Amino acid sequence: MKIAIGSDHAGFGLKEDVLELLKGTAHEVIDCGTNTTASVDYPDFGEKVSRMVSAGEVDRGILICGTGIGMSMVANKFPNVRAALCNDLFSAKMSRLHNDANVLVLGGRIIGRDLAAEIVRTWLDTAFEGDRHMRRLQKIKDIEDTVNGNGK
Image (cartoon, rainbow, N blue to C red; front, side):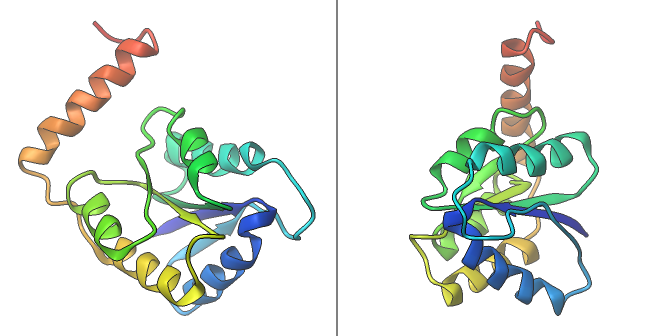
């Protein structure tokens, strides 16, 4: 799987931890920055990752900012992106099972590295259930198309 990851300064430390975790996997990872703790604007990095997911250049994305809220807002502006802010294991699992989330968002100032590692593993290892959830995702897609002027 090809994964893009990005963070702002508040998520930089946790991003580095997640990158270390992903090194031991078969996944191809693209680091979209930031690369320091110097203050930056989270939309810049959220856009990079989300644009790649939206265009199908990567299979999934991971975004990290202080709370995860800002990155979630940015990511969900993009067509075909289903970003889920998950700061617990249950949310991570359900975001994949029922929502087929393709962007995981974490709060770098909310969770620690051990929990983040478990969340990332759970999120990457959980498959989408499909079935009745496909109908619901199609309804979300229809809303997205209508709002963007591409639909009904």
